[in-house]
Length: 64
Image (tube, helix red, strand yellow):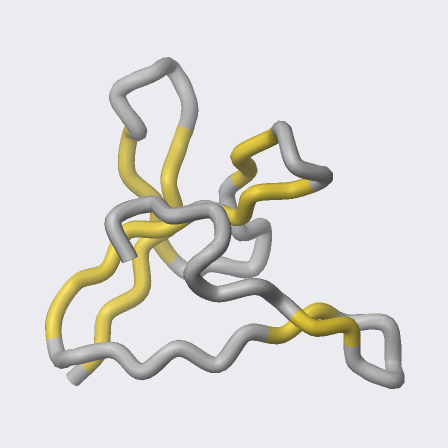
């Protein structure tokens, strides 16, 4: 989504978790969460991450 903060809003689930269903093509996808309208944060549950170019980390998901 080219890092759009509005393209895929998350919904709060009954159990308190947050979810967004995003169709992904096969390949490597780098992402972060945009939290509280001001903070980019890596996914703490991600299996992999890469440097984000700004001194932090971005999460990575691989889709087969």
